[in-house]
Image (cartoon, rainbow, N blue to C red; front, side):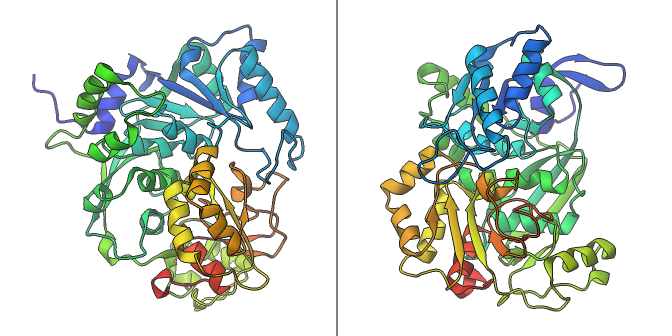
Length: 466
């Protein structure tokens, strides 16, 4: 019997099925279990309290990122209420159960979805889980990765498996080539605006097309990172020569003869000719402008040169009206020229070295606008060190930016670091929900370049004007 043509999503899934259940779910083997300070201690402690042990601690990795302080000279204290308790609990359980932990002060420390690719822990063809919704970031390395809850983490720690329902498949095809000042962040915001925050619910997305092939691996991570903002379970990009060049020589990557074997296998991991996806979405990357959000969902995105829309012209008028009320905006307002109070560059979406280089190129020789608060938080200690070696820290500091330690920081509010109520922020992060960066804070999402240019101008600006 001839086997039907399969997608890369089919192939990775089927290679990891341990058993099929009568209810349509599968028992799936999980290659890597990734933990962080906000929930890792809970999962490990619960496992121990239940009298269970980690099945394969070689496949478990943790990092400090969510509740740690990002201010210079930090230690284990944190402005997050009870944050030190989370940090101490995670550190204690990680040491007690002998898992690899990238702790505060470790040169490998950083945001989960930045350091695990940096270290070569995320590899093509693997399945990976983390108790964080932006785990699909790792799909940029050809992995099938998704966020789970603490209970699922505990189960996987004990069994190296999870009961999962096979996701639908979605191909997102970007035709054309992006114009100047249009980046991966703009590509993904435009997609979410086109299909909605629930447009890919239950799907695993494969991003394809000439625009994707031209992206470096760090830009691909930005794209996959925000797949979850369209409701997707996972997002991935097929391995290619660009990915192999990124991976080779990283600490946890295969080496020597194993590298030669693995790289050949990874390059074969692609869609069969004639493979059919459950859903296909096509966007013309060449027609897109730099994107900025106007509301309280990533789907509330439009070109930086556009007007705030009339709620009646949106897919959910009542939600749009509430968003505009929260954001203190009126329909028909020009986004370009809208005054801002603060700018933030960082996060698992846009806190990598390439992001900081692009932003530094914009601010070099300039200074942020009067009264502006501007902060740069590198995504990892390695990114921070590399940026400092290139003098990027001095570029930002000379321009009036704060230069922070690595961590999630101002991407989300957990009771600690925050902007003040009513602050209008332009941010390179992934979520602009109400109160996301502090109670009453109004967040506009954009690429690091748009954020940097706006910080200098003192208002939202189309970076093509710079």
